[in-house]
Image (cartoon, rainbow, N blue to C red; front, side):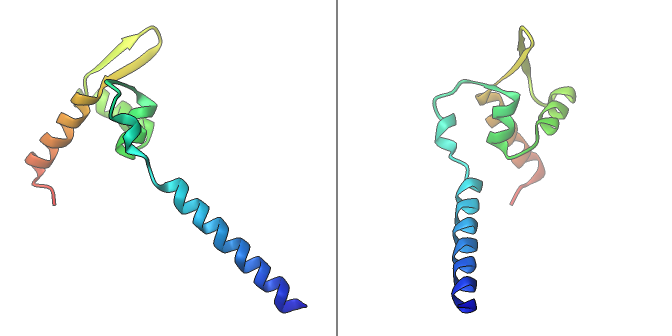
Amino acid sequence: MCFLKIEIVNNCLKELEMTNKAKKQIDYSIFENKIWLTVRDTAHYLSRSENAIYLLIYRKLLKSYKLGSRIYLKRIDIDDLLERSTLLQGGY
């Protein structure tokens, strides 16, 4: 009886671990057709925090556009930043 309960708990833990792994995988295809990204989208796209994106904007490494109270960034500018940083830093 006790062995059966342990087996059930182990199976539940395995299922939970599998769903957590699935959630961590980012579907980048949602960004293919977008030209403008919000700060949240950009953070998701770069796998960084929103504060990190605000810091890049503050340091003028990313050009941002404001419409009302929202801040938008062009995806091509973000991709250019990635390419430049790889070239300058000699990324792996």
